[in-house]
Image 1 (spheres, rainbow, N blue to C red):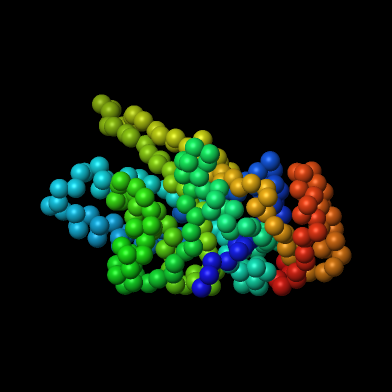
Image 2: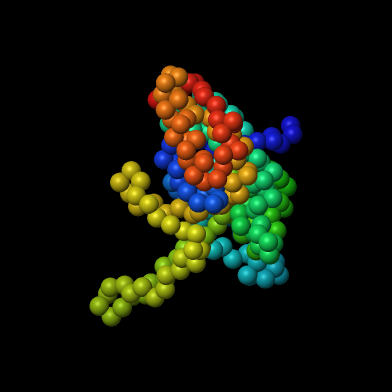
Length: 267
């Protein structure tokens, strides 16, 4: 099957305001353990990493190429499904953004050709399939001298079959987060070092908990349309008017004719 021309990001009205905050589209990438699947990424990683480490025991591959660091993927999710009742209900969204898929891919590196994020379609496979398909279909896709780094990236695009209905594409960026501690003379612990190197990491309060997220930017021209989910015409007109004002404020008036209504899942 050919890759889709567009992918879709479901969000709330508050989420839309955050995305259209500046001169770029700014998405908040959730850390993997804040996703709807609590075992996202870890599901595949716990199977793959022991297999990889065992395969290189007794070889002459340099240790730095197999070292396993504390990597934490941050993820922005898209779907191939536009105006989909399951997605509206599952994510409790009021807005669906239509995004040019090729624009996401082309923007994954900056002018200096430095990688900003990985972008790919998720694969939905069972535990038994991971071992047989992993090396051929995933680990070779990503360029890194470190074998475990490549495995980490590949694992972030593997999901359980139970989530296959979402037809997800992802932007993924990794962050090393670590605290080094030592035991002091009073049998307490002293923090020696704390590393949070990426200045795109921010924090917010969500559901009563502090949550870290990473900012992913896309050019405004990658946004090709907005679907508003309202239960009746008058509610849609009120919401549409405010969205139109927001787009004009952000110098994106060319999108005014690409706002549409749905009522697939009245909220």
